[in-house]
Image (cartoon, rainbow, N blue to C red; front, side, top):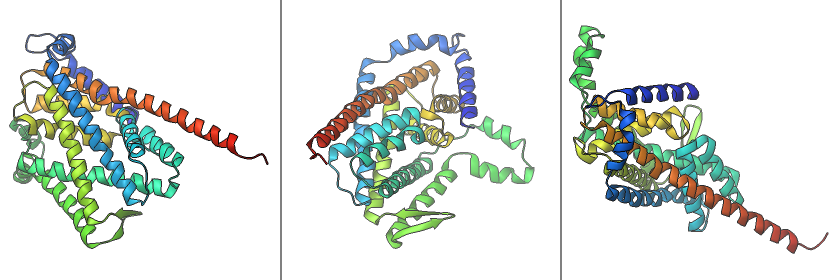
Length: 331
């Protein structure tokens, strides 16, 4: 299914890029010229904001390590966070993020059960933080669905349901309300229900209320800053930063749900589709150029740095084991 989603995303992306622009030239042919038009100050700003974002990401692992009761040096937590997220963003959380964290935390003496608890807390922090932020954005700065799209769908549903459909799907506010309710319920459980709760077959931990607030704050800050990186690389967008943030939230959630490693193709096609359908800009080639640079700065560059850091850490681990072996007395 993941391969099918990836193939579909690539096909849709190619279909988007073959579409003629305002001057009649396919978008893919205009990408090199559009890349040269992106201001240098925007690229420098995007790099700086990306650094801030990856510093914020350390908070995910720091909270999780505290919750499971382990004491690790901050540099270790930062390395696990940076390497885990850099690899997750490019290769996928299942294939890379969890395995890298397991490798690092187990090498530092964290028990397997605590690593599993840590990974669950990381997931809860991300999802409920996204629910809270997306709920606020979708309610107070909703994405409007174009009337043409509504009419196309209304024509295919029964007449007695048309009124309800228009009420629920003219913008993102109803969906945002649902997300806010879910996030608030999580905080309520954290405030009044200690320990854990059962969800169907699974038992999920419920952190203390103060830690839950930190979870929501860190995940929200993560998404706010990541959307800011995309915003500074885009051409002027109708609705400004809040609209770019809302589009990014929708795209990122779909990337996570698709399980396509790194969201390759999925992130780009969702953002381009939303920009086109909502008619947010008259410069689609500028949006494509912004996405290309975003992919390089936010995804690929951190991956290369993480690979170097992981290699250095592996050499250090092997050296320490070798030193320990040679220092042991003979049997």
